[in-house]
Amino acid sequence: NGGGNGRQPHARARRVLMFPLPFQGHINPMLQLADVLHGRGLAVTILHYTGFRNTLDPALRPEFGFVAVPDGVPADVVASGNVVSMIVAMNTTMEASVAFRDVLAAELGLAGERMPRAACLFVDSSLFGAQKAAEELGLPTIALRTGSAACFNCILAYPMLHQNGYLPPEESQLDMPVKELPPLRVRDLFLSSRADHDMLSKFLAKATHAARSYSALVLNTFEALETDELEKIRDEIGIAMVLATGPLHRLSSKTEDTAGRSSNVLPHEDHTCIEWLDTQITGSVLYVSVGSLACMDSGELSEVAWGLANSGQPFLWVVRQDLVPGSDGPCLPKGFDDMVMGRGRVTPWAPQQEVLAHRAVGGFWTHNGWNSTLESVAEGCPMICRPQFADQMMNARYVDAVWGIGFELEGELERNKIGEAILKLMKGSEGEAMRKRAGELKKKVASCFESGGSSLLAINELIDHVSSL
Ligand code: UDP
Image (cartoon, rainbow, N blue to C red; front, side, top):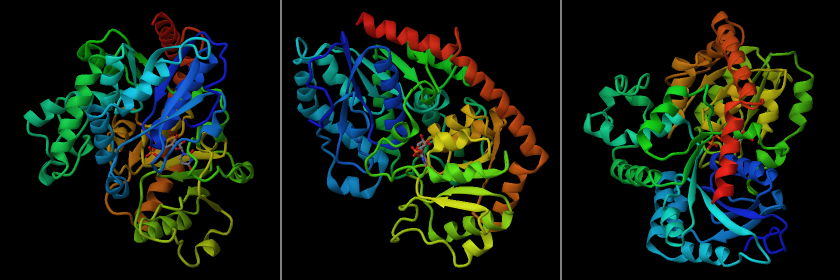
């Protein structure tokens, strides 16, 4: 067992078990949801894998119980860094062995004097293998989808996409529109290489099958942002409760250092960059970050550095220690500091939500992980999109073609092109129009949490549902 207060006598009447996928972009929203449920009087026990890069740090949430779960992922698969293979192995292990079921059974056995009864298991929707064990033990499962509603629709549509010849993708078809899922093009789909295609198809088919028998489905999005996409899910999935409760980070009462940094391997957030932002002109700074997983090679790093330096625009750039794989650490080009002369700031890990909310930040160069996209939407910050894998391309497409709050920087990274993109966003009239639209969306986010707001109502409905289990 991983610590926390899980073995103390408990004043709370009901408990929820929560099982996140061990990646930053999945851990954060699950913890944010846990904070909300805890704030509403439920006891929380987090089940977690410990053998991964982004393992959870129980010290960051002393109010929760933590229970370690054996993952069964072979060391070579972890070392490969192939996220899909890792997730497939986690689910295969849960389906094939009783280890996870035993952990659940032990937790359920604690109900009584020392622990409140567990009402349900919240599981990341990619850990669908957990559902079978929960079902066998009579424990209802509620899934949290940490991606967009559009992305889930795409997963539901995977068999059709395959049948209609969009997948596996052909190089020559990448710009072809997917007329069944506008405005997506083949390049925006949840793709894999041809080699991984079978594995991904089987994985998504199982995830979709499991999704139809959850007790409820919670999505980290909001009604006004993805109205049609949510309606489509409700039409297709056949479960009564599909709740859009996002952006969850806006509901969690935790301070940034525990909400943003949930892992004990990522560096502490550099709060000195906020002091630096305090000295900058309102709306002048471009924030640059590619999240916790995306990488670049040393040539690309150098082009980004010179693009930022040459643009003349103030910037705050997150350069993770592992940003350039295979190196001893990222190496910025010689002469970069002299060229920048204090106009820019480089940091290993920023308090992102606080950065995006800062008055000095006027734009975000992002990889379009869903959390980053949603955090930017919540602060009305327009984006330069540079997606790399998984759902990032689709998120970027929505930012550009649906919400009109950013544009994609396509093709090879090249310093002059980068400089032009930065000026387009930060100084140009197109950028200004995007900023205006982003400001309108920000207001819609705020209204989600006002009395009668859609996300607040969804949270209330969720709490009522959990209380009824
Ligand atoms: N993040 C952060 N500081 C950084 C970079 C990222 O706190 O310097 C957080 C960010 O706020 C977001 C998460 O890390 O909540 C990244 O999730 P996302 O889904 O955007 O991308 P992923 O890391 O999963 O690719």
